[in-house]
Image (tube, rainbow, N blue to C red):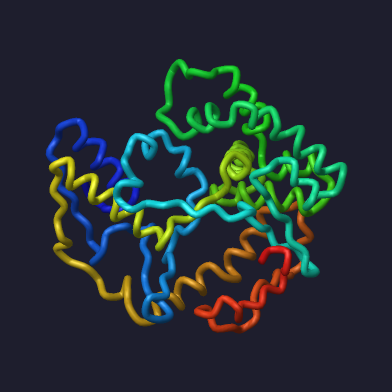
Length: 297
């Protein structure tokens, strides 16, 4: 198996479970790829280098078959699944409890949000199992998938524009859909927003205690337990991990992504406006992180 990221490790675990001999090859000095945790700012202060929130992991049919808890994986759930910053110090929050949507949205958009998600949440576990599991020619819940598909085939921008009036509801749905990296005007982009918001209502968006690397360590332990072999890297580039790496990552995920998001979301005002999140602070001191959007704290 080439590449010891989450997908590569999961595939290796499945192959080893089927009785095949598996050998992993990884070019970097650590396994995990997009699910790595490192001490970037100080000793014992861990940062998830890439993925941190695992919105659908607890619903993954594959993960549900693995003894992750036995290998140290513990999920942490916040009171609110996510917060979407808005201009002028506002923030839209999404709670697992669908009834709390009224705390974030106005009366009309709250009703529209409930109308959109309540039918899907009624069979949320079954729907997420269909969406996250292997594709079948004969799905177990065809009518449920069809119900989801009526809105899911649309563009995220079109669904948000036609369903909601305010920027808070549109921002919540559009922000979830943007995780697909599809243009928000693209067909089927709404499906990603619906699925992620559905997961938020069904169980929240958890993080892994001690960092995402714990999930990778667990997968590797399960792989070893299934008598598979993992190879140390034959070669690696020091430029991928080292001084300045975090700075490069922050530059990539800053203004460029904001500008792309504004280009892809026509229902927003296209002024060159960014939403500030933090003032300068010591990231190692929880009491010194002054969020400008206090509702997102």
